[in-house]
Image 1 (cartoon, helix red, strand yellow):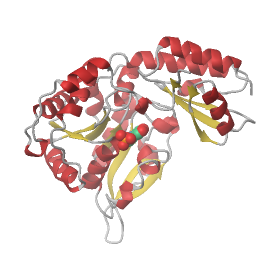
Image 2 (image 1 turned 180 degrees about the vertical axis):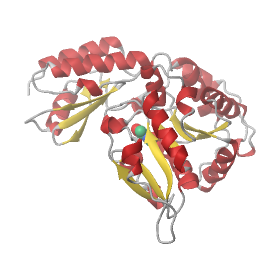
Image 3 (image 1 turned 45 degrees about the vertical axis):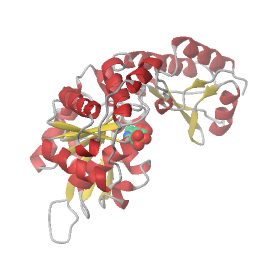
Length: 341
Ligand SMILES: Cc1ncc(COP(=O)(O)O)c(C=O)c1O
């Protein structure tokens, strides 16, 4: 049975063309700054962001952890959304390694407004852990792949700047946000001080994430990457996949978003699932199964080859990516419609 992989866009496997680019990559010792492919990937990312510099790191978790450590700082408070990936799915590194105190703020569809953030800000005083950083997530994974719109970014950025507080963006799926909102990466980046951008999600590379920021942040990030054991040598073979992904796989993300909507509409008319269609903005769909155990639904779908993940007792998540083509989406819809629960 051919499986239809909808558990995550992290399941994407490198295509033949990507593997060829990896095979042909020129490499050197990156700890000495001599891997030409990594250098090209870092330059390309900085150029796309309109940033001074960028750094190749091994994962999105590291791409968040390093800016949290440098810009957050031990004993300081970092404000982030209550459902943030950094807070719940990065093994507590924000506290364990960065040493910061995470302060969770509410926000409709993952968006932090100046009003909600204002209530969390702590000014510097002798007995107070003051606010050093605001971290946003774009797209917001556990709010349903929702995007930050330009006005929301502008409002938070103006507020943060009035308080002298930098913003870090967990942009693990920022390329999806750009495809959905029509904003360029440079436009999004102009509202934040640093960003983590994953190459290994919808873009389809097997490994890697980029940190973008100003030159001093990236220099300090390079030192922290080494402290964390993330200094790499001839990693141009994997950076080549990232470069290939940036050049060839950004445009097609809109296709994944169409697929997600097709599946969401099909689920909504299935009779056993409910989707809040207003949240389906990119490649992620959360669906509820009222009165039905999500683990049981996950197992039934898996029996038919449709792989999704239960996220709560009556809720599941699916994610579209280049791993699933239009024909498989049609097949998944047929299985969803005919599912005998
Ligand atoms: C929003 C978000 N941020 C960060 C990460 C971490 O990325 P990685 O798994 O590469 O460490 C993920 C992973 O799924 C994510 O969804």
